[in-house]
Image (cartoon, rainbow, N blue to C red; front, side):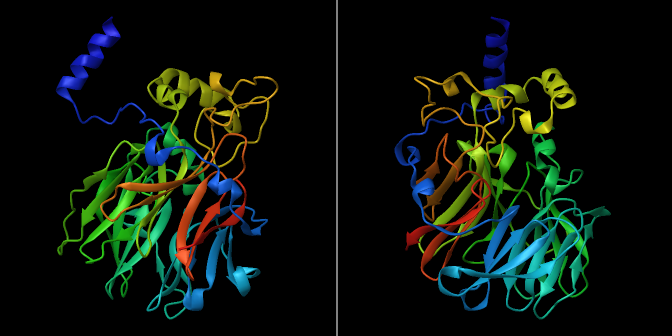
Length: 368
């Protein structure tokens, strides 16, 4: 009774607080197996995190400490174009700058192109520990989404467990490399997308399960973000613009078990201290089907198998949004399938492509 009363009071006093019931997967969100059924253009990646399109529809893929170049028919040929000192968390191509690599615990470095060797490493006295995305705006500014101010990008699960709100968007001067924070206190910003008029940048906040926006006003001060889409059914990871729609890739589904655990600080602390990380109740790019993995009741075997609609620790989800951010279509890989952890999606050469960390593969979702 006391908990119910507390919830009622909280709802009245703070109607916009972050805790929300997970929305149902119906309508355009209805599960299917389109990701699992999609042809795999290339496989065998070790630790894929992002990809981008370069000149002549060449693809660059961030795979662990390597950056790969994919070319030829259906991007079947590949070569390593760079090897860096830590995991590459994000990639971006800009004709005037070149290929920008977001390097875990280091910052952003141009590894190929006109500005090769240029580096963007810190802002407001803090190193870019979790640079997830880079975006060149205009001819003189670089924006970087830094997921966490205190935890490396490869340890994102620790930031999730800490209910991290230290993410930031940083603006760098391309000529001088000087950076400044323009928005702070974010729940893990993991990509950046510029509006068509160039005056606003959009970004997912994964741990808040929402998409936010930030006006790119002139001046040196910080800007206030606005919420564009709130209470998504999964943790949004990357946002990209297509010809006729927006593409949102998702890390994993939200589940009642995970959401409940975020409110149980003592239990969560004990779990992190006593249980190996692979078996924490937390989002994951893939399921290892180990007997020690956490499950929910819906995952229990019935007649020797788990149902496709069972709540899954890892999941594959990509959503197409209309320009007004309403969902129009979704692609799924459900429990028991492999194409989970969609870390990025984009359009290239008239095709819709997605990168799955779970399947360690590049998926072809068909012609546009």
